[in-house]
Length: 236
Image (cartoon, rainbow, N blue to C red; front, side, top):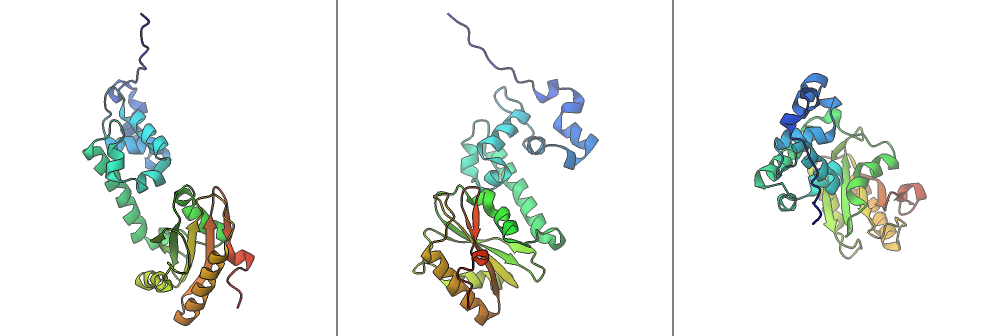
């Protein structure tokens, strides 16, 4: 009877000291270690013969890096072998601390200077969504990002989208301007007549409320379209 080959994963304690995540962070600094190593430090221990670094690498692969981990619920994380309630909560807590740090440090906020900046800000999170999501990129007077809330989930059309909801979110954050972004689950970011019609209504409402719509970005698979660049919905 053939013997099964079992992959050997050395435990962290068996690794050379200068290869262990915690020791490497002390030696070279947090910015020099990998994302997997940082996640391993948060998780602290592996499970079932798998060391914590391998567990961290598997999590990042399964959820397609940090944006996917940030979107995952505690229950979804707990479905991963080796991740119990404590580890799932540790991951969510660490990512939320990072989000709050960014929100509390305006000088560190991303700045949107072009349609590509806006698309790149959200593409990794939105391009593979199975439903349409409408999000806002709320900006201050220097085009720095204040927040990127999700306003709607579902088909984007004028019978569903209440324009006031968009501006309510902008007013709540004291935004000087904003960008609308939504995805096409088909992967094709070509604008539909409804996309153009919604954009036209938002532009007109923005003129009345003195909060400018800078652009409407449609996100596909590794592609995007700027309605402002194409002059769709922004003509007087």
